[in-house]
Length: 302
Image (cartoon, rainbow, N blue to C red; front, top):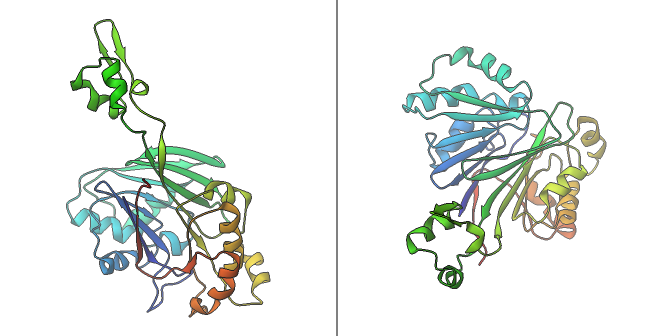
C-alpha cells in the first residue's frame, strides 16, 4: 500500500489558504517528498506526518516555489537527531544549488547523497520505489516523476514441490535470491509466476503538454498534474509562461488512460478551482481539483 498526500496545491507563492505544491508518499516505513517550497514543513505538520522518515526528496526544477523550503526542512530533520543518509534527486546543478541554500544550514548530523539528472529520461531504484524521471517543457530544465511499486508474481507451491526445492529456500526465492546448494542452482523464475501489476503514481508540474508526459503517465493509478489556469482566456498566458490549463491536463489524462487525475499548482488568482470542474470532467470524467492535504491510499489490485 502506498500512502499519498498532496501537501499543498498552489503555485508561485504560498497563500493563507493554500500552501505551495508538494507531494509526500509513504511506503514500508520510508517517506518520499517531491518538491519543497516555502511552507512545506507546516503542510507536513498539518497533515500529521513526520519529517524524520523522509529518505528521498525529488525536485522538479529550481524555481523558488519548489525548493526554497529545503534549508528549513534540513534543519528540522537535523534537530530530530536524524543520522541516516538523505538522497536528493533533481536536474543537473542540484548539488551546487543545495549547497548555496545550505549557507544557513551548514552543519547537519546526516550525509546528503545527490543524484543529478542530465538525460531526457532516467531510471533508478530507491527506497522500494522504481523512479523514472522524464524531462518536460518549462522555461528552465524541469522533470516529471513516475513512482512505481513493483510487484513480483505469486509463489507457485506446486512447482516448488515438483522440483523438490527444500522448504528453507522458498522464502529467499520469493525475495529474488538465487541459491546454490552443491551442484544445484535454484533461481526465482523456477517457482515465481509472471510479475503482477504494481502501483503507479505520476507527478508533473510547470510544463506545457508533451508527448513524454503521455508516455510516462500511461495507465497510472493516479496522475497529479499542473493546472495553473482554469479561467477562459488564459490560454495565451499558459503558452507564454510554459504552464498548463485545466483542460490541457485533462486531455493528457485521457490520452494516457490514467485512472484518476488530480489538478494542482494553481495560479494565486485562481481561488475556486471547483467552479471549472464540470467542463474538465467532460474531457476526463475521473478528474478532481487537488487541495491541501488531499490524500489517498493506493493498494495493489488482486
